[in-house]
Length: 265
Ligand code: SAH
Image 1 (spheres, rainbow, N blue to C red):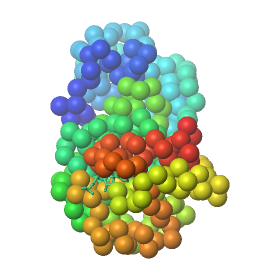
Image 2 (cartoon, helix red, strand yellow):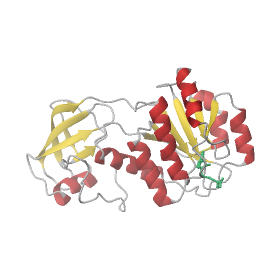
Image 3 (cartoon, helix red, strand yellow):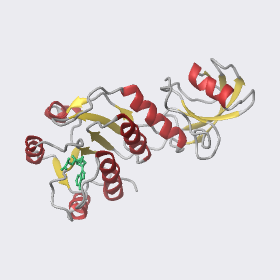
Image 4 (tube, helix red, strand yellow):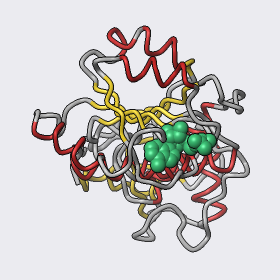
């Protein structure tokens, strides 16, 4: 995966809180295997971090946990690593999807990174009646999710899906996400009831169950969309309090309260 040029690693925190270089890779991770990196990560290790033969790197692929590896051949275009041992088991993500209407580029990156840190398993951009941004680079969103996972010591990376029209997605929802409840962040819902709504769902056994959090665009949901959503049996309207938040703030706030009551916090 090549990282878009303007997503730079913060120099004070290369790619992991522990300071040790940590890379997401696509290939299988198993003892004794060796792995040749693509040009972008090779450049990063050899030229940016000035690492050489024998230096240690942590790898994860979202399936096989985290592995310690060492540089066998510090080549700046195809660096070869040899895997040593697994340092962490693969940790499951709470089965919570984030469905959100895309916003402007910088805040889009923010949503992808923060949703990853909050443990979203799927990031699904949805195009609603009032969504302004429609040109969406999936690989950019995925790159932001990967960078957040590398930097925050995560071993799982959310699946970033291609943008879909909300109405179309909901029309096929039973096929796409059978049994998955939708928590629809409704700025028109009466404030002060979020705790009751979520605790009722917890009481009905929805903690740890498949869920989706839906957040609208800066222009909000249209009345028709709100009616459509409120009419669905698999959808619950959720107020995030008396103040209207920006879409990116709402996405994070929603993932927090849902993670707390129905997720794995
Ligand atoms: N322009 C709209 C607000 C849109 S905010 C208006 O003025 O009404 C963008 C999205 O964030 C909303 O569609 C909703 O999904 C979510 N959101 C923001 N504040 C919220 C709140 N207090 N309660 C529930 N959802 C909220």
